[in-house]
Image 1 (spheres, one colour):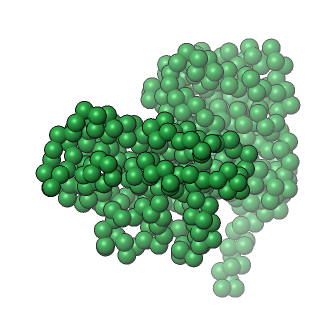
Image 2 (cartoon, one colour; image 1 turned 60 degrees about the horizontal axis):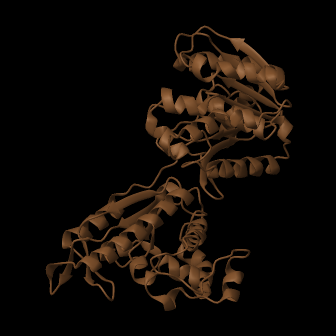
Image 3 (cartoon, helix red, strand yellow; image 1 turned 180 degrees about the horizontal axis):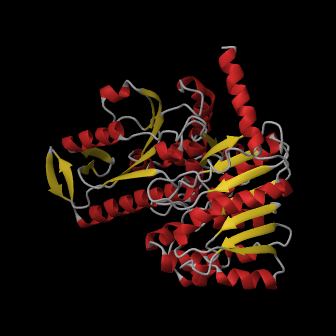
Length: 475
């Protein structure tokens, strides 16, 4: 197991043996010191023993303790304007006057982007642990005894904790899916002026247990890969063998009862066509491949993956077929309409995402995706698809009057399609509950693909069987 740690002083000896790389620097010192950045980047590869992103089993441990000292050490956060311009171009951040309790947090945003973007090339975001500390606001340690803080000292400690909380929030926004472990007891200031810190003995054990017991994510199956741009996106790509090499089927996943799953792999297994299955594994149950806290950063990462696949395989966007049912259907419709995919095959999508998440789903999902369940956000997400609609994509929609979600979240799409003159074909099936669409959609999908793809779907299966026989014969 390869463990990567940022700020490794709190890690005990037996875990230190597994550390292949650590930076014992604060975020402020990293963003302020070009030499630190250069050393990190120049020497990074030699510290990572496993180079293959799809095989690495690592942990990146980010420790916010050093921020406490560096926050008040002006000399560590000053940087000349020219050095800063070389480091991050076109950013207007003034380092000449920095109020330690009123920092421009864009400084931290840039530092976090630099650190995480570097590591995300080799570590999945789900394997990053942020140790989010809080200092005790009532007592400090003097001569190994707990002493009550004075009022002005409590205010100071409170401000430090607010500062740490703000940094934690920035991590959530920039790196959705990061594992944040808040440690809010057992940590004390022992010298208020120098910002020295002491732990209760049991706290150190707890910290090391958090790191030791944290399980890195495993691939769902051997062919799963991770595409990293601004975020890591898990996917499975099956390349066409002989036919339809100029076409790409993209499958977006529905909600699942437990962990995120790829959909319709078996249904499409016999089709000789490029197939891209994308996992929606951020948040509690997925994000419609959009983002968390009102952002669209997951969409950015997904489109980076899609552009990579179409570029490598010389596929035009008009030859993309986006596919999905329920949540997956919503995403297939959104991406297909926004990016002008040629065909969209969907079953019972939630056209009104805002209404669905606020009224018909678990409320916390709306909080995660929207940021908050305000009326403004509800309206925004209800109209998300309408605002990016185009009449170039051909949409094939399977729905049912018996779907318990139909009246609230989909029926209005039929009216909108007429108003906007969308190229929409609607087919109805007989179901009594929304979840039953998963039983009806595979046959519907096959019926539509048979008209879009060139070859008989069983040809690929026969070819693969022949290849297997030859492999066994000449082994």
